[in-house]
Image (tube, rainbow, N blue to C red):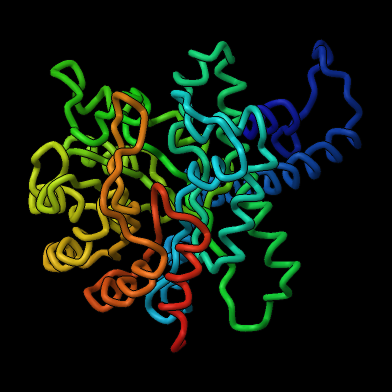
Length: 387
């Protein structure tokens, strides 16, 4: 519209004559001046518009081809298997944070953001190649329930990414890693399942009830996804997905929002065979394999003794990158909000099994609940000792 107005109001046909009764008494030399400069301005605006349109297309919900390959590049530079960080809430609690709250670790975005950055730094020092943000249980509805506005909730989501990016960049500069063959760590924006928002343990059952369908799940995740991508995350991490329905919702949302950065979708498992809902991984992966926007698939917050067989199963079902970051083996009681005593892996076990998981086909390995920087250090040492 701007281009048309410039043509109409600022130009005339060359040689046009003015009638004596014309209301336009602009001198002829000024008309010529306006003709020349309006054409020049029109060309400049046209070129700028084309550049803007091209830039907008490339940067819509993320960036272009180089960013899509960032995860593959990271894995390759790490020798074929990169290290994901470990349990976030666990480490916050070790530092004294009280987060027995529906917002869980996201509570520290409000109360102690400096501690979040400190934990990110501890995982980088332990050897993590991927930092997962503190947004797992951070949702707009969750923040609204705390009396915050939607704008305040969005700013807290943005902060979860900014804190991780700042920690990553400060670590990179402090260690002087540029030019030494290292890849800068990637920041993966955590998007917890709908069940995580409910905070009733349903992310470990997948039972959301008859009123929760595909569209409701997409609408639930949509705004958070947009905010996290625009905040500058390198990739998205959909975590603890308990059923095929939510996996499909996440995949379709990536398509609808034209997300250009890498993403992974990880399931939990309570029996070592299927997703918590009982959906088979064959059915779940058949859905995800249809989308190039899902870069990696895998398992998180499942007992570690399930992991090797699950990797082998997933490897037969997909050509996507496989990511695994199990918990310690302890069992979380979602209703009582506490960990139940059970046999668990210690850091030494994680170090031993990390090599087996890599050999089975995993390309991203880390820890989830009840793991710590010591766990990640053991994983990193095992995976990078010969690299």
